[in-house]
Length: 369
Image (tube, rainbow, N blue to C red; front, top):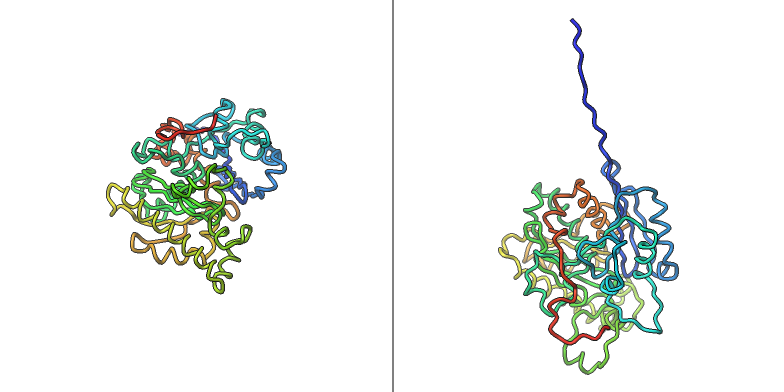
């Protein structure tokens, strides 16, 4: 008696995606597919991108066929195809006033190149666009966390899912991103971002963070470049000095030590403040640190120690050797949008339900047109 076995086969498409992080110091690029995992891990200095924006496009096109790109999104937009971007959308991603003296460089020019080449990609939302953040948190705020901070949170969510063996909707933590220029703090509860304090509101190594209203008045006209000043390096008096050098200098220079103390103070106050946004503070499982300077032990150690009173502290685990967490998260989001491995994370974050404008709920006069 002959027995015939029929085997049903089905071709499964391997989703291949790209994520980009437009950082202050470097632009990072991550390629991801579900067969190889990380298949591209590359970084280009931001100054080089500004001089020749086309190298970004060349790198993206050199990767061959990919299914989706998470585009560098700045202040973000509700989920939108690059090819559908309008002039207003370009403005909303960078919030840079038009000037006859300014040439269009960096992010705007790259997005226009991507649109011209009809690259298949999405603009991602920022924290303010998310429906999981209460409206009253958004009043008179623009920067609750840019799109790249949303991306970084995805890596933190994946960390907790794997390390604590829990589903996406049970992940809860405070995220502290320590970037080259900006710092940011986000609250993630049950897999959703519920609040954020963006880099415009916390002192960074270069950025001033929030500006006292009376200081703003006496400054008169505040320019975009002023936002990138007033941080640790400015206080110390060494605008271009790296964190590694400032840490060494602080051991013998009182002013530099004061600058570092001000930085730590600003970050710690932000973490304690955002802990009040949790529906149940006992849900905070960890305080996770990410970003370029989270990898620098002498700088992050005091914060790891001081913030243990809130929850166990830890540096976020990276899934790449070169690119920062935000580029990784951007790629994971692209994968999830296509129904891949990270679909549950994307759905829980409610990225598809993002809406509104970054300029909504501002009750002060704005001059930008």
